[in-house]
Amino acid sequence: MPAVTPRGGSRRRTISEINMVPFIDVMLVLLIIFMVSAPLITTGLVDLPTVGKAARQPDKVVEVVVGSDESIKLRIDGKDAGRVALNRLAAEVKSAQEGGQSVPVVISADKSVKYEAVIKVMDTLQRAGVQRVGLAVKSTS
Image (cartoon, rainbow, N blue to C red):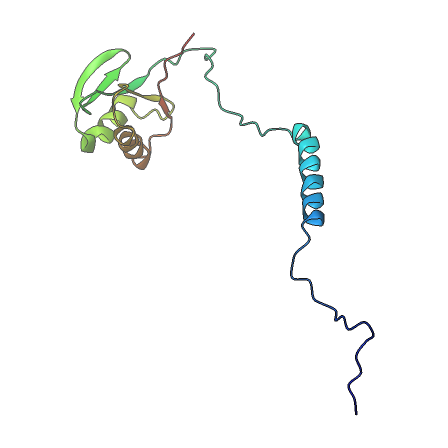
């Protein structure tokens, strides 16, 4: 039997190219959607704690001063009580509090001290059960 071929002798060829026009149209629509919706999105705000002034100063304050050479001094009501080793710090602070857990302990450190040294002092005090431990800050106003 003879092979049947369509008249005119042309065969259908497959197109091996990708049409990019629909892809570009979709991308332009997405770009317009993002450009319109971007100003409507609210940015996330972080609510940071602020430093305020207390209504009344505490009667007694125990201050732990970390020097630039990471030495630790104890100051009770503004009077120096001398240098203290880190392993004796908790006992000295507890004796300075005289059994009163409500006496605040303030840690003040030199600007050049490593953060790790301040954390070690804070961790030592908290492990010993000292309740009110805070950090001294310098106000910029």
